Length: 128
Image (tube, rainbow, N blue to C red):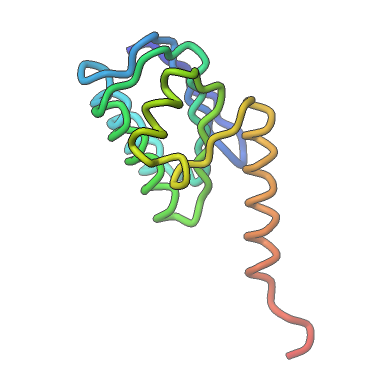
């Protein structure tokens, strides 16, 4: 499976360079996602700009990423999604479960917003 990984301090971006995320490629994506979280990733962006087709195995890999970010109080964002893939997500009734944004820049901004909210929520109160 062809993909690139771009790590920054606050997030990791996986950009798939495949047209299909199917039963042949989804296990490799799942494995990579698990490895990233074992090495400390908390926020993940999945860039599907090149992906034109996703099957149930691909959706399963996406849901693994969603669950793992939730387990570490992180944020998972999918961006650059094709119409065909969006139709499958809607048919599967996952559009309300997944955070889907149009562009990579919007996904990065969502991660930063999540981090700010997380920081604000964990600061001790001065009124104690």
